[in-house]
Every structure is written in structure tokens, then in C-alpha cells.
Length: 65
Figure 1 (cartoon, helix red, strand yellow):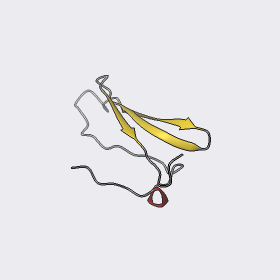
Figure 2 (cartoon, helix red, strand yellow):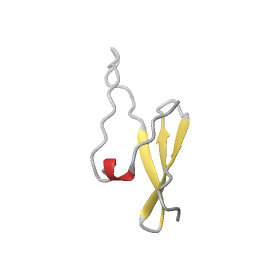
Figure 3 (tube, rainbow, N blue to C red):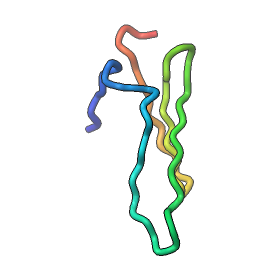
Figure 4 (spheres, one colour):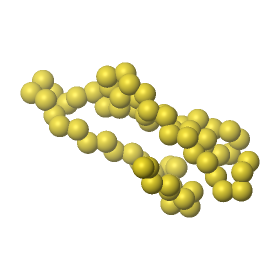
């Protein structure tokens, strides 16, 4: 089961670093992280793997909206 992270624990503008092992051909392609907004709130985080797979993380805030 996934852990619920409270909104005050998330820093939206913090840099994100993803570590993966290097290959003999040089550094591997890095994944992309995108945010989707609704007004002033981030509603979803999208992680796009270098292989093309996408992971969507839906954010829900206390108090609705």
C-alpha cells in the first residue's frame, strides 16, 4: 500500500534527482518529471521513464477543491 504524503511535506520547487547505474556506453537517459496544475495547485505528477513508460501520481488535498 502506498504511503500518503501530506501537502505541507512536499516542496514543489525542490530539485529532483533520480539515480541509476551508468552503463559502459556512458550515462543512461534520465527520466522526466512533469507536473499538471489546476489553478495554483499541482493535481498530478507524471514520471516518464527513459523507456517510455509513464507513471501518474494523483494528488488530493484535504478540504477538497
